[in-house]
Image (cartoon, rainbow, N blue to C red):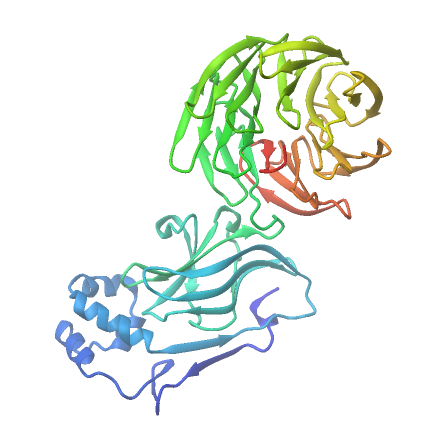
Amino acid sequence: MKKGRWIAIIIGVIVAISGGLAGPLFYETSVDESLPNELNAIEQGLTFEKFVDMDNSARQPIVDSMSSKVQEMIMTKAASITTKVSEDMDSSDKIQVLKIGEFQGVAGHESSGIAKILDVANSTYLRFEDFYVTNGPDLRVYLTNNGDVKNGIHLEKLKGNKGNQNYLLENTDWQRYDTVVIYCQPFGVHFGEAKLAHASVQEDEEVFFTLQGDNQVGTLDSVRFDAGPTMTYLDVKNDKSVVLATSSGSDVVYVFESDKTTTVPVGHTPKGNKIHPDGKIAFVANEAAGTISVIDMNALAVEKEFKVGQMPHNIRFDLDGSTAYVTLQGEDKIAVVDVANLKVTELITVEKMPHNLDLSPDGKYLYVANIGTSDVAVIDIDAKKIIKRIEVSAGHHGIDVTNDGTRIYVSGIGSDKVNVIDADSLELIKQIDVGDGPHGVRASKDGSLVYVGITKTDEIVIIDSETLKIKERIQTGDMPFWIAIPNNP
């Protein structure tokens, strides 16, 4: 869809006092004569209008020679002008919101309204709604990462400092950027910014994931943390203050906090990690070493390492944190660990190659995804025995039970499907085609959305849990492997 398909496009101007015409805009007639005099002293015949409309390369030498007093006068003059825009959209077109964010003023300037990235009949637009920003000389629209204009994309001049407006994102790699910036070109000043979040992601919910191919940890808000080789599993505190991520290739766990990154050496080939419910310790499963490393979360150091069995892969604490369950791929067993004494108290036999696991919210059932048999073993915790096996798709499996206990989602990296199991009937109710190589899978806190990392297509798929259909596909970087969401253990 091209620009000609917009309807009811009105570009108006609010005229102050009696108004006169100067270039494309109306300006107030009561003008402080000191600004023209100051500009004329810099360059003969230079006016405010000429300065604003100049090519930036020609204007820069003038800016370099300009005093801060004159710059402030230009800013004040521009702020007194309001350019009002009203652009609607063709209501017959199907419109999908891809990203959304709220404008905030920067550096003492005011800004408000909503920025949206929209898919409209297979074209993509950046749209501002109920928009306002303090006017300035030659304001521009940029897509950036964290406000970095130098490495961002310049779209075009701001159409108006007030009102709804649309910017076509044709041939633009907009997925790479997370912040809209309103930028004053002559003086290099940010006037307003809108941090963009994916529209499908729950408000105030952050989705963390490892990028195995990029040696990074990321979020769907496009934040990236550099890490180490072969990033596999991760976990996050419920308050989002700490993220733990395992580098299986360097035998360390990366600890990301708001103001620092710490590396904690652990055992050989670490895989799954879990933060204890009280937040004071974390367990790390060292696959090649056959051990669990216990990390003191205050000291950020290993306080103890103990033997657990052959090829421990992942961990799940029970509700009060007194017991931990560990998959032992090399023994086809689940180790039951007394957390207070750091000892294995029981072994539950499953088969074959138990990989990942989760608990029912009431703590009565343990669900174990097995690589060798491509099924989920349902274990009665009290009886310590399997009560049912549920066949699922092939591969290394991720598994997640929703917080309300109604659904079990199981991925399979050896296929292209996510398996949906009804927790009451323990029946497979659907297999959703998501793309080649799904692994990490986590439901939102309220269970309405399911996030799946697709390792071969480098994206996270978001599934609507009511319709069991894909809502959105988000490009992430190379090989999103595991997913963690606060308040979903």
